[in-house]
Amino acid sequence: MILKGLELDFFRNYVHTEVTFSPGVNVIWGENAQGKTNLLEAAVYLSSAKSHRARYDRELIQFGVDHGFLKGEVFSRSRDFTLEARLHRGERRQLFSNGVKLKTAGELGEVLNTILFCPEDLSLIRAGAVERRRFLDDAICQLRPKYAAALGEYRRLYEQKTRILRDWEDKPSLLDTLDDFNLGMAQVGAVLIHYRAHFVKRLAALAPPIQGDFSGGREQLELRYETVSTVTDPEGNPKAILEQLLEHQQSHRRVELESRQCLSGPHKDDLAVEIDGRAARQFASQGQTRTAALSLKLACRELFREDRGEWPVLLLDDVLSELDARRQSFVLERIDGGQVLITCCEEDKSVPVSGKRFQVKNGQLV
Image (cartoon, rainbow, N blue to C red; front, side):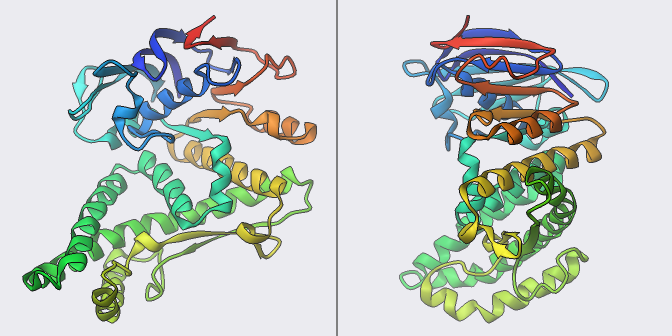
């Protein structure tokens, strides 16, 4: 899987740019706030229709204009593809593959997969469960369009149920629809739990050896999927999970009504991360936190290759500068194979590049 090139119009600080990448390692360097990360963000968007830095598409469009455009030339599944995203203020985005309008964002992941590691990923270990759920969701959505559709439906139902719980005392008739929303959430929630459990099982086999290599064999990483307490086998049949979710909803019905919050469901799931038997969120050092997060991303990369038969595009945003020489060396050895885009603030000649180097200055490739 190769991102052969990008074309951007009015995306972030790029008025217009076209860039052709090497199928190997690409180093993108320049001072801060010049647009290096924006190139990686564009690649991520073309694989998922999401940005790791923006909540709304309008934030991606350059100030003073009402539209933006992204195009990526991709070689995937032994074929050439052209992916396009057309962004407009106040209107829905439009996504295309080889000129055909896509029905869902999940279809992008059938063509292009990306794995991004950036400084913000320390929150994978340090922050609350929201960040780790987002990590799982973003990865599985690229691999499984069915999961992406279920996740979108769950979020829609969750918002509706939240409104019911918030307003039911003023409008008691809303409670007439609560059971229907509970059933819908349990049905799609069972699908989410099933997919998440199987993904974490595979991740738990791939990530610990990477963390062990990072630490010279001194650290043992453990991953565990935590979901609704009544679900006895998250990897089991979704029909069985459905019944257990309904049981949990019923037992929490009164407290949900009293608190006016949706307390039961996979929107509370977590990926527990432990190092040497202790919760990484509470006890990991800065170095352990960084390498644990990077181990998760590199394990994800290997999982994608197992699933798709080709490497996803690996995007490393200002990662090497925060690692010591030994860990830098390990990362560079580990990313052998597949396409890689690395950003850094200086033209680091120590990075072995059989591909290309780019300098970015004020939204232009120099």
